[in-house]
Length: 377
Image (cartoon, rainbow, N blue to C red; front, side, top):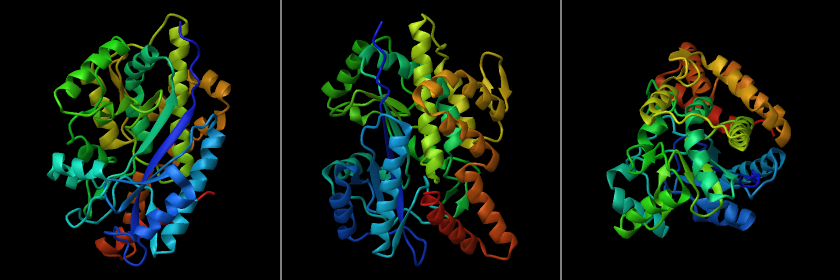
């Protein structure tokens, strides 16, 4: 039996950069802004695929409290530096109204190659996400937990949704980002592998064929990181409110510890067929926390509220052990007030009801996102 993992934590967030005067995406932010961010934050700030985006990443953290301090610093610094150039970051997975046609990709070699390889699919990647790394040092354990925790990924996605609008229209989905991202190859739920060795053999087939350089080009909803001894959760939208981001990171971390506890007792979570988990993935993408997900053991759709309470009870010992009971419990607050997607729609409806035109209402959504991205700290 492998030793207990460290369950260290790292969080990556991607933000859109908008012009404060118009609310539109900043097509070409001043290079000085990114340079200043790197000077202040070092490797914790980096360009993203589009110039209108920026990515931040915490250091390796041992606690949720430490991760929160890091994210506060990162969001605050990016907002401050962007403000010096008439810009602001928004933590939302899609921009409410900007068209993607005139945007430019970053000049980093990785992104130049990505644009060349993926063509039109890449040009539509005006999306931002949140990735959470949790330290799982044993390689076989990492692969085993990757397969088991996939069952819970739709539950995390539903709680994170922040991308209801696309090019000025309400898509009817809570996470339209998923629809855009899954046009890329090697996305979606990962395969189920029996061991680290089997996983490596499959990756090597793609590498030897010259299709990918390494496993970093696997863009699954969850993957074994190619850079760190971590299991990287990638399915979630970026959360507009920082407290929500911390809660989802805490839940993911606790779910992994819960599954490790089961394994230590010679038990495991059932690996359901991917076709079934994909149904919940779609329901989370479409409805968020509103319509419920399928409990495959019972064979019925269960309200999300009930599922959340079951999850909170499952991970209660883990939240206590990891010192994040409060952060995990905040999931109930998200449920009561709605996700960012719910709130964006509410802001839009309220603006229209007050007499705003649709473009004016969308602009108010952007203003709301600007304020909420740096709210609460």
